[in-house]
Image 1 (cartoon, rainbow, N blue to C red):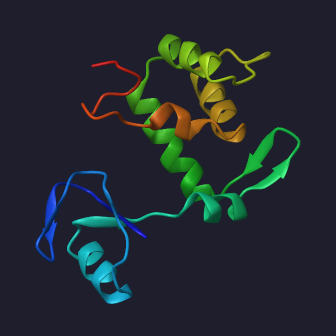
Image 2: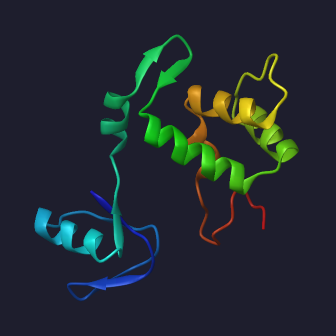
Image 3: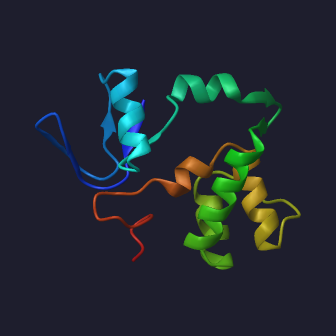
Length: 127
């Protein structure tokens, strides 16, 4: 499965940035990814298979952890990040530093909740 990295036209159909392009052949997907028009993504089912639940902590691949870490660090200042984390139910007991807040968000499986973009391209309504 792939997602459009920017607005593209493929096989006579227009796709917005972030749109999921499914129903393509493997060679069509590979071509769009090679052209840097799209990126591979995993389905929620595949993500659940990758995550090994142990209590409240999720184990995710290091490269995915780093991607989440960078995005959260870039999108939020420390106070907004703490506030958003608490709103989605992240346990921040004994967590004070921004890097630790980011790790708590990712390890508790809440990164996607804070990184979902709305139609305007903002995060949680922030500009």
